[in-house]
Length: 139
Image (cartoon, rainbow, N blue to C red; front, side):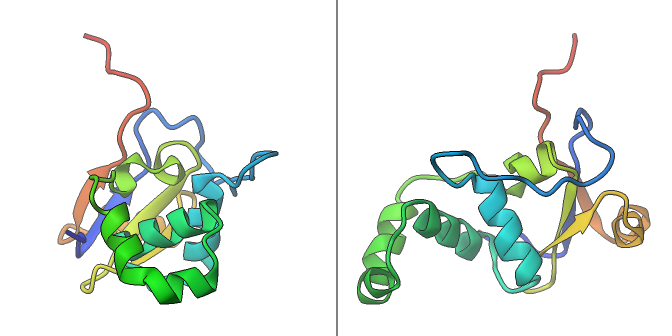
């Protein structure tokens, strides 16, 4: 199920108060860098499911030919297991990016220091959630 009309704020325990562009790891592309690449170049183009599937295809270097020929089977296999939402994304937990889902469930990124981010945070009509904490809260 793709969320609609909501905003994910950075995690309360985020280590940054300004957005950071995630970098790839030496041997394999990181999920955060692929999510950032796709969403920064194509805001409001992907739903959560579409984004997760695209990230998986890129990380596993599935060719465009294979995607076209076997899309349904690859999609079904990928979604046979549950996947976390953007509240668990490193972009929202660690790198200082808020996520907005529009009325069609399409996603865009907003830097925590931006005016647009603050506009979403201050919007009383917008459904808002914090990204998941990286550490458990003290009891």
